[in-house]
Image (cartoon, rainbow, N blue to C red; front, side, top):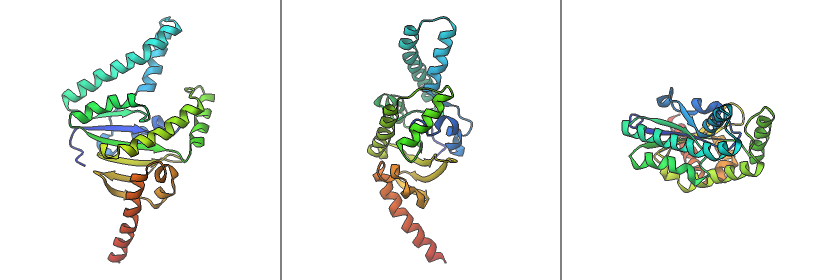
Length: 224
């Protein structure tokens, strides 16, 4: 992958995985310094501003989401016209999110995905619950489960859509388990195949990793 070309960097993962906390360190060095557009955080910020202005609850609920969507569309248009890189934090479970990704693809941008995940839905739900106790965004358990499942489903179905995919474990300190570029595994840790979210949720990538690891072992033995 040629990182000198215009690139969309996506940070994604289920609720509670740590995307907002660790998003910037998940990006490759070529994207360091880019501000990551986080639609959920922008909605909270805008809703808070409306509240401070005295707007009523119904107005805030009806207006905030569409307003942030319009802001993101304008920003995307400006970015593409200038041929600059862009970073976006978004779930991939909802078709709505892809409407903001597709314009980059249509204009020849490379698409780089950093996907941060936890071992299970319950791990995500537990973190979301702890976050809610501290005043964080409330996400119903069933919503977390849905995003967890369909994020993986959509990535697996569109695996060729991405020019690069970094699969990252978020259980402790975020760790890159595998790097895939242009459909080829560039590096992988054996523990990647111990993660059910990879083996069960991303079987197309798991197969590539399974083929890569023995080949890497044989190559090392031949050099000894």
